[in-house]
Image (cartoon, rainbow, N blue to C red; front, side):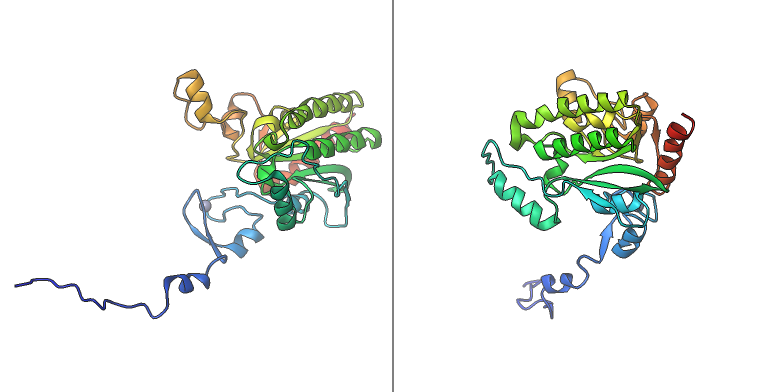
Length: 285
Ligand SMILES: [Zn+2]
């Protein structure tokens, strides 16, 4: 005697699961911090900050410029500089193919934008990094665009603002990427001599060679709340030091407490904060 019997024809879905999912896909997103389900439009209107818990999502490079610069046309510099793939590098796919893919998807030639415009009425040069472009990595193009932005700042005396969002140097360009650290740092030393202020804004994540060069060389180094900032990843450090790292290690708040940053500023206050800082640097001089 059978007590239970599995019906062969169980409850059948009128529509397959895949089809049902399609309708809502892309409209909603889940907050990584508070797990709230947020309507994407709400998140977008709130500059990608969770309306429930203030968690800062990543903001793309162009919207970052919109956030910081005044609502008027700005000039974009060096938009056509492209990498030449000097090593003909290939990992799971050729670097050249990765580049073309990212360029098509994002409508940018590389992982950074340089804009010249005004911030609260004050002329500035503003660079903004794009994480979606091969992890916001710094190769020859990013390095060159940053160096040119610095030189432009020095010659025009317009203050420089760089928003970092990067996994570090671009390994597909090997030593060419690493040379950018020295080049950009030397250019910043000249900017310092020219007495033009540079404000560095570190967003989630800012790591590797970008932290090890311009991101930490600002006259003011400001981070967004909760941003991951570091050089090597925590796993590498733990394995090297053979110790457990403290809670919150490599977050913006931890670095502020330990004197590595000047301020942690929420995204919505960022523009006003930078404007005030520039006023302090320039108007009191
Ligand atoms: Zn949230």
